[in-house]
Image (cartoon, rainbow, N blue to C red):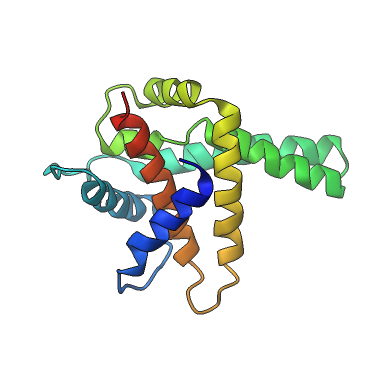
Length: 170
C-alpha cells in the first residue's frame, strides 16, 4: 500500500470519529495507538500496555533521530542545503524505529530486532518513499488552525495500517 492509500484509508477511519485531536505524552499516544490497532484487527486484545515506558522509548527514538539530524547543520554551515539534509537524515534515522511502538504494544519480545527485520523486508527506500509524504502531510496539517493535530493522527494511523498490513501479510 502506498502513502496516498494509507492517508485516504486513515482519513476515512478518523472522519467518523467526533473527537478533539490533541498531542500528549508518548504514553497517551500509545494508548490511542492500541485502541486503533484493536479496531484494525480482530480479535481485540485484552491486555494492558500501561506497564511499558513509552515516554522513554519515544525520547530515545526522537532523541537519536534529532542528534543525527544536527550533523549536517554543523558540516554544511546552516544553509538551506543543510536544513534539507538534516530533515532527510532525521527521517532516515526515524524510519529505523518506524514500527517500534506497534511492536511494543504487541508485546514483542525483541521489538528493536523485529522492527529492523520489518524495515529490511519492506526496504528502506520504500519506507522512506511512504514516510516522507506522510510526514509532510502531518507537518502541513499543523497549519489547519481549526484542527491542527488531525493530520498528525491521520499520519500515525497510516503507519499503524502499514504495520498491520505487513504483519498480517505472509
